[in-house]
Image 1 (cartoon, rainbow, N blue to C red):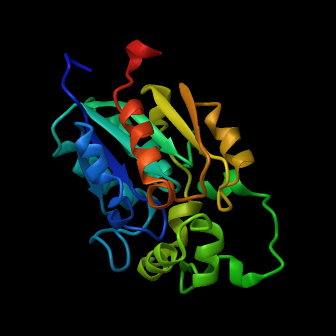
Image 2 (image 1 turned 135 degrees about the vertical axis):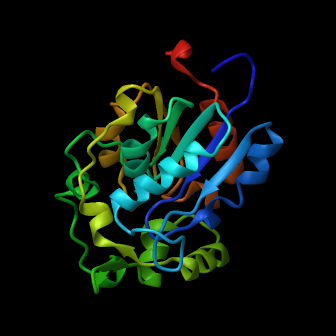
Length: 241
């Protein structure tokens, strides 16, 4: 990262979410001296564009091209697949941060990394398919995504979730940005959606590894702790490896 210029921290949401999920941490990050840009990926009731992984990656490439560098790209959950596919095309991206995210290699999809997974005896605690989209019932959202959030925060977040096209999570990546850009993997040790065991199999690919004792959505449940961690990770570059 040239000189002492602070990076723009690009925040990429996961499946079913939108840029709104970063609202609690953005003011904390900006108070720490980081410029931020929260991306709103294409999807139903989100940004216009194609709803699959290819469409999301194209959208992110265009967003990154418009931002002043240097760039630190932080991706949550499914957003990790999008960053992995798209971020390597931009020379201004100095570091990647995978927040309980899919750090995939070429030819892998999100589905590949979670199967075989545990089978819940209660279907209401799992996402369901409808018309080519995956939807998250409120009970599943509370269980998988917001288990350690205050109840009212979890309820508000669950109400804002939007459907995600199944092709987004089933398509393999064709590029692996982390192979050429240094990366930090942040494991959420109480995650019910992407278990620590699954995260660990991907975290070993990253340049650095961190942990936070949270569920799947630390931006909502542990915003101050997460903001401090991201502020440190965002300024890491190849010189620190």
